[in-house]
Image (cartoon, rainbow, N blue to C red; front, top):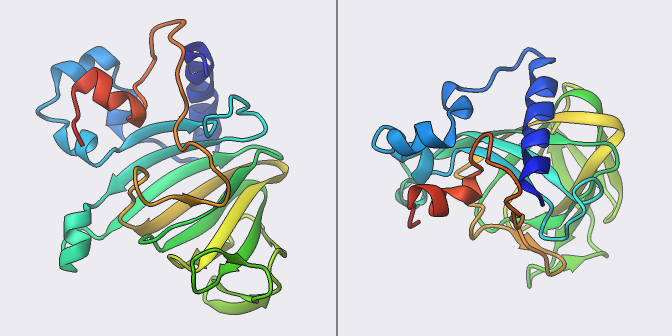
Length: 232
């Protein structure tokens, strides 16, 4: 993706998010130079990879295969292993109309996916077999806003604004997209690790390759290693 396109997506996404009365935390609006100057203050932001995340899954076709994400808070895997501390994470996301976030699951992360506003959020769901791979013969059992639902593997779950689904680690394979328009999505989960805890059904990248055709408006979490020397 070209940096100019990333900057455009950031501006558009911020406007879309604000239209629902949601405002990003202050660190979202720091320039790269401000983040470099304040690295000591922002170490938790960098280490826990909070911030802007725009991915085309390495395929260069964001409009059809992609997702906008912003991680507002996140714990640490050491807390998760210890069973105490900051065991949770939160994201705000945008799934554009017919823009696919491809089939995947997580090994560690349990998550609530919430339609915060806009159009319908459509999710295609499968259950994992004993080997962790998709087993199309198995039913899908999920909880939507506290109510148990059983579906056939490959069925589409549609969430209207205000509705949510709980997805469990290792078991729940899912892909999703906006249906009938763009969707503002909330995610509340256990600790999030996008470096190691995404298992995709097909070989695919998690982060976009950036072509630097202009200066970044704000850094992406995938920029932190290069710009801020994060060694995580």
